[in-house]
Picture 1 (cartoon, rainbow, N blue to C red):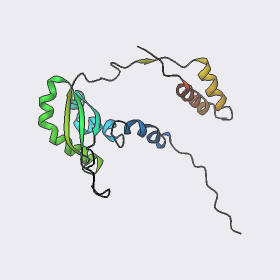
Picture 2 (cartoon, helix red, strand yellow):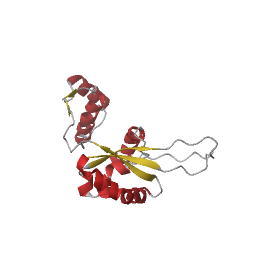
Picture 3 (cartoon, one colour):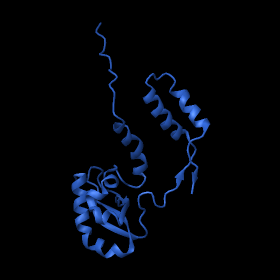
Picture 4 (cartoon, one colour):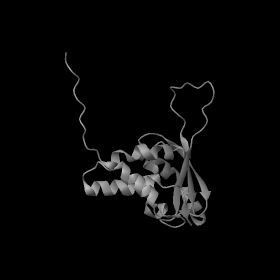
Length: 171
């Protein structure tokens, strides 16, 4: 009797696990993946990205009777733009559609919809998260007891304590 080959435990980088954790959150905003959000400065250019942020992709409702195999209708990319720049974004809208579609590799976006409002800058308007408490640190430490490498165990303890932390924030 021939046994099946054993599955090897190969170390994987943390970057391989991030999309699995982030994609469900991004999907709630209509984004199929994080590319538009993560690479917005590359897509829009540094100057336009500084005064705008992608909010969501709004997909049209599939009409009844349409074949499930038919390609989807393109979505509308909803952008928050600082008021003074809305006119400029109206002019560069078709270019942004081309750049987003080129980045994603298919005709995902058909038009840009602008919402005027303040754009969140790096760190501005975000709440400060309190450090984890001793309960969370103990819980994380209990889960990493068997790890021999001190640096890895320490990193996992810090990460675990943040994961177990209740969603409380200091404004």
